[in-house]
Image 1 (tube, one colour):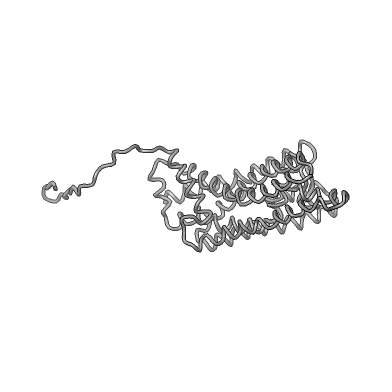
Image 2: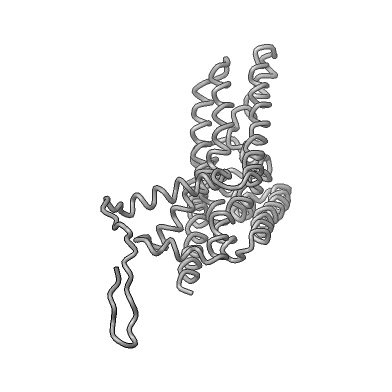
Length: 308
């Protein structure tokens, strides 16, 4: 059916499409769907087969140190009391896992962050998200939450298996439980920090290859510089400069936070322990800044890109 208009006017055609009569879901449903789809994409689910190789390979490699440490715990019953005492510290240093495997975590974050933040900006599909009642801030926070969840799961799964083996042994279960949950909180904070930094870097260069390289350079270059600075500060006996240096890298900054708040083992000897309310408060502020500042920059970048 059509309606004829006068000269110079268009024609409206009724193509017979049926109008939507169902319930229109709100912002909460949009955020939930965006979160679940983003989390699935971070592990390559719903994408091409080759996209699954990197995230799952790294997830498997993260289990290797946890399995080795769990195997050492199983062997403790055959060791002398002296050997058990020497091994107890490393075997209960749960936050050491993300620190010792920071190269694997960096590659995981660098490979998956462009999937969630760079592609939509490069191909201008990001404007389609905002055709729905979804703010720029909620979009960024939801994507960050999905990436942080993926990072958390990659670390927490092998760490939990390590903890489960420790509970089945004759080691101090209370001590392991305290260290495990403190480290779990540290992994959560680290996941938020890494997601915020990687997301911000990926929006500065929207080409996936460049974004991957940029994230790796930012995280690993800062890690190398901080490791060198920590060694110098340790040799000079300057704990204050050591804490300043530790704040310049996400892995060492979060390690300082967890060690100060919960009196946890440090992953490396050169990392100073925050003693007193002042250094601990400084560690809290540093970690908060590592999350908030990149997130604000990321929101600003998405707002600008969506308005073009």
